Length: 321
Length: 256
Image (cartoon, rainbow over all chains, first blue to last red; front, side):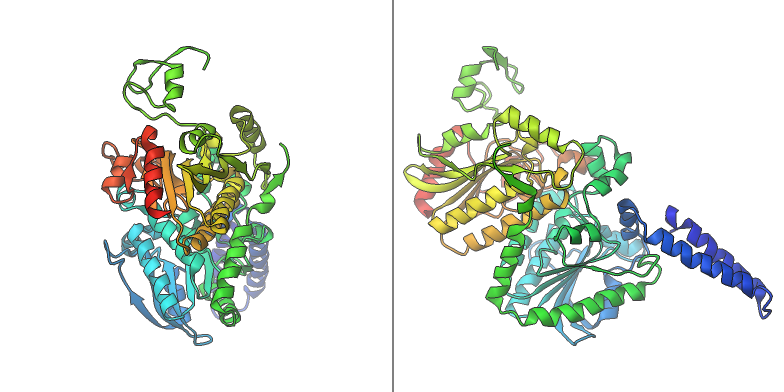
């Protein structure tokens, strides 16, 4: 899939490919190829350093963007997957288990939304939108992490918790709320990276953490920009404005002190060079996990309390209106 | 509300305004529960003259400079006489001191922004510090979009506050009224020891309209009502508004 604003880049890439094919062994076309390669690098820089918030949302949703499976396979040398919520069923929209990270050799409980990688797996994982059984499985995994003193690493990538009849019948709101309560009192480090979409409560249930990193083209939002536009502006076509107004990009959230760090993506977005984006997340985990490991459980809980207790206080004023 | 008579939106019967007010906005013919402003809810639940408001004078600023937000806030303040969509304080119920917070749907749909999150957190912390029961009455369409991610983070704020309170042995009782949805149900409103709900109250995560639009599912009759939620195991008891105070007093007699 090619995003609209990527088109100039894709056209240059196609022309360069074509010239390479024509040039064969001859060196006659080399000068033209070099010229186009420079133009390509310039176009990438120009386009990807000036993405609007809504364009970043589109990058975050790109079907070729590396997903949970790509990170899991690249970052863990063993992933021992666990399944089920012990009450209703298994939800493939969110996966988790014990993992040994290649870098640093840490044992962690690794959890992530799984958007899938082809039609079959995307449908199976409901496009990363979990049902209550998914959030209840997550809750089980949080409890196991606490029991075995293992840090939790979450990779967030969801449009949101699923909005459907069965999700409601099985208590979607209750399941999310339990996760938030479990995170709040967990005695082990909670490390979160938002790798793509951070859709509302369904994302927050996995990112009320001690460290929250965001890939530079990921987003975290209380509601999808399209839905916000249709409710507030009564026009879903104004999604780009809603995305800008709600301050949902990694840089905005860092500036508002909601997240700790913006993790670089390769120029052109994670989907263009998945290894580089995965590397960026892997090195952040390698750095953050040992730092948090030195903090004792009660201090961790206290720090987490203070961190989330404070948010929004500067969005109020005292006195009379 | 100048007219002496009004007509029930549910059953169509004429109602004396003062009868409706005396019955805390419950139709005397069909028992339909209309939304109840927070100050009246406080009067319904607490012993006469016992309630003291706390946390007054906290006002939402417009942290993102969101188009139209200041205007909506001004209008809501004028309409309700409240600072934001919640009243908080302490009072007694049957002589027992409780920390109480009551949401008001009239104020921008009872949406939760920084002020609602802060007042809920302060109420929880007050109950924790004073070692008294906690009672929160919810009425909310969800998070307040005008505050963007700050509104989302109120779910985390209220949850951390509650997570400490529930380690003690004092009860948290949540009362869900029409409607309670979104960020409020996905955080403090459902994380209680006992969850009560008013008859017919609509309670859920996503609204029925959103579900119908996204999944094109036909939703069953009575979907997301308090009765539906009780049948699905999510709510402990359905309590008529006019019986709520006695019910709460009874419950506190067991757990407080």
